[in-house]
Amino acid sequence: MKTLYIDCTSGVCADMLLSGFRALGAEVETGFEEEMRRLIHTVTEHCQDGHCHLHAHDHGDAHDKEHVHDHTHAHGASYAAVREVLRLAPLSENARNTARRIYETIALAEAKVHGETLETVHFHEVGRMQAILNVASVAVMIDMMGVDRIVCSEIHDGQGTIQCSHGIIPVPVPAVKAMMDTCSYVFKTIPIDTELVTPSGLAILIGMGAEYGARPQGGVLAKGIGYGDRSTGRSGMEIYLIEEE
Image (cartoon, rainbow, N blue to C red; front, top):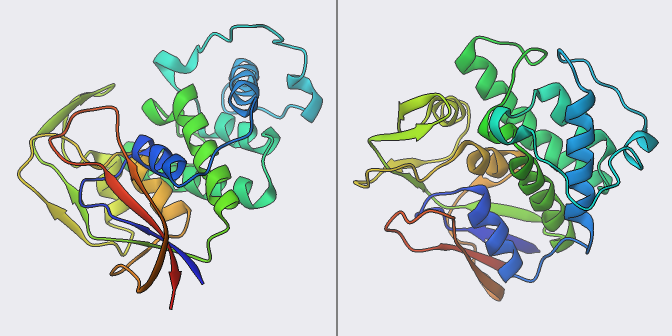
């Protein structure tokens, strides 16, 4: 049985998972990111007030440009818009379902925090173009690796506060705290004054079906180390592909 083991003692974020999966040899196809950027731009331009339903061909020529302006950079997108992106995205059904579970996890947490419903909830950081692209890419890579099981270690987070679109907020941030309250992972706060666990990172673990446990016994087929885009004083995320005994 092929198992993916993720060591989360340095935290978890989408960038760490992406770079770690790439280190294991997983990658999206050439042109995937550009196609996704065009699609995200088109869908978020057309979705208004939570209502959007484009046809599959609507994103083909509407924005056939070299450069796609990311107007989601500052404002994010609604959950309805993200669902529409994932409906039209060039994904296998396995990858599409994984990406949907990840964003549903985020949406449930954000709705709880802001007193919204899944129909009205709007994303900030996790609704921006790069965040949507990261989730879709992770879903593709998981599908590509064809693992039978995913296991994660105890998850370490920092403390203090962090600056985000809502201002200065405590760590763990509210969306992460909401997810912590509904999952079965084991969390530990360590004395580092910054965020180590991001909403998208934790939602990816939950959405791709990772279970908490010790590193499985078996032969190591590959090992990758994933790095985030911020210096936290911790080492990278170690990810192992294991053939379980």
